[in-house]
Length: 59
Length: 253
Image (tube, rainbow over all chains, first blue to last red; front, top):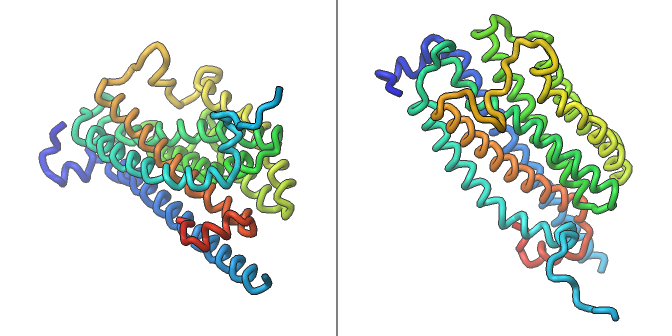
């Protein structure tokens, strides 16, 4: 497959909006999921730390 | 005669969150690595190798993410219902957590299948959306995922939340064959399956691009689900001795 330049590549034969609109949404949604996964994990880690600290102080 | 040694291989051994947590942690980097490599290869084939489609022009290139997302949306639902059923049948904590961990990624894949489908439908059918059997049943799949997530979130008691979610997930499985066979059972705008056990109706490079992207989506989904299930384990077992020990040793990563 030869595109003959970046302009032709980005325009996707006139379907650029549809093709790139699809791929951009995949990137956006995956980025949101990764961010959500990490922030929830951070919260869980902090919760574990709090629990351990409380267990130590009452022991 | 009784024996005191545990069997060498026992599937239930991994059903303990304590043994699964470090195992999943070791597996995640491999699945991330595979997902990245397969995505790069898949995108290269999709945009640099696969030729222009004779009838649809370049708009068909949406297929390389649309079909993988649609496959994963159905596959993840079946796996989610399987673990939910296992949790219901054996009361294994980890099974229910697996089901809960799969739901958001499954909903994400379903949304992507619908979104990319809409953007593909517009140039090929002239409409972003039609109430046809394939599209409608896929939309119902999204509602099943969201319903499962909302139902579990609405019930405070974890065990009851797991059970209620499991019942919903199991009943909803009926929708998966409906999605899959909808293009055969009803007259629909959506095209039939391009890939079947008999072979494929696509150009070889197009097929390879699609299959490699599907594998990439699969590896990503596994990594995301394993990452989420580890967080769920920590949330639910934060008072367990083993979690405290790992935290004290700084080995929670």
